[in-house]
Length: 139
Image (cartoon, rainbow, N blue to C red):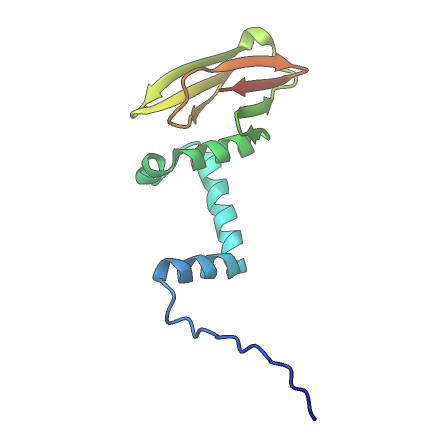
């Protein structure tokens, strides 16, 4: 008597049952050619210090924070960020918190260099210290 082993049949989608947002996400992930465009666009945004798309600053201010942190060779942490300021004199460093266009913002000024860092919406308390030339900002 012959023995038969069951073979599972897998259903393969032709993509027509996927939602537009799922298809867009798959395209964006698989679109290697888009990464260079994104990188150059980000570089232009960081170099200018501002976002040409005003709506982007309102919709996702955390993206701008990431770009600025990258520009400053910093690191983002779950509870704050770190920015290297090696060689900067303590009396030339000024950090202040305020509100800009309805968003909590930190203003970092080192001499004549100034950057405004948008903060996540739920931030109340800011603590900052400098250790070995690295500015640590925690919330």
